[in-house]
Length: 150
Image (spheres, rainbow, N blue to C red):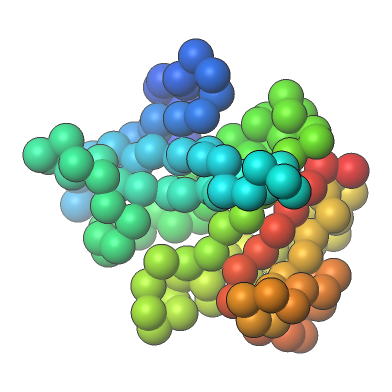
């Protein structure tokens, strides 16, 4: 995918953390993409996008409103593509952290928009509920996503 994205500034030695900075009129916001083992039996890793707050703490619930969602999602997608190339056997799980479902709607819209490209790289599944999943269908709404490198 050749979309404008941010430069990765720091990668943890074990590839579990990737840092970049969102830059827009509202200022600079440090971002962190984390990969954490969620289910050792099925080799599933949780993917989280976090803001690094001024205090040094991280948050997956802050709303930046930096008007650069496309660049942020392109950066996260590039990170996931690179990470999955290093660890193709891992399944990557992600979902929105907000109760209203706005973040899931953004993720769903991004996957739907670039599905023709993403499906060449990944098997993409959507969770209908906590336990039931299906191959991604752009017409359905999902609770979470699971992707694995082809």
